[in-house]
Length: 208
Ligand code: C5P
Image 1 (cartoon, helix red, strand yellow):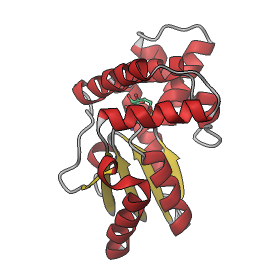
Image 2 (tube, rainbow, N blue to C red):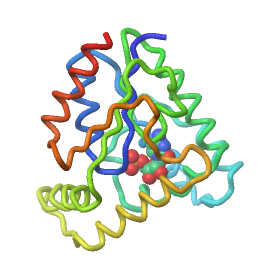
Image 3 (tube, rainbow, N blue to C red):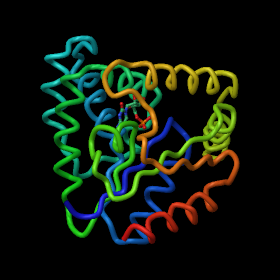
Image 4 (tube, rainbow, N blue to C red):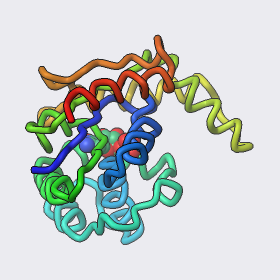
């Protein structure tokens, strides 16, 4: 195994920004594993297939191409909702985890971010980070992002959505969201994303 940086945490905690910065700094490949769940969900929605048939969803999951996954295309609220529903299915998870594990082997190193990277996908990762922030800070960030892009949003709806997504991610039986025992905890509500990047960099530099 090459160098693997595993980054987990709840929605809107700053994992994406942090992961991209780390991948760029070290010249590593980056996989946002949330996009693999989103791409599977979108394929099911586009084909008009049900979201509650595990065998059908597994088949779609096995067809997802990791190259070219694009958050802009997969960002719709309905896709996120559908992704979090199919993410409770063990067969879907197994299919996507296998693809993610194959990706993690790439040289010279990889950064994978998601919910279960340090616990399930890459339990032997070189460095594990668990990035979190309070639900209201995360909801506020998402709200500001939408407003900055000229969109419309209700903070209360976003807050309720963040809480619901957390409950689904942390409460599922298969691979619930939780920090690995050996993960470094980074709370970005206290330190901000730039400080979190500096802290992450120091953990990585020590391990390399
Ligand atoms: O991170 P993002 O919101 O794009 O992920 C979409 C959904 O995919 C999440 O709500 C989560 O339930 C699921 N997911 C997961 N395991 C991962 C990454 C994402 O269950 N490693």
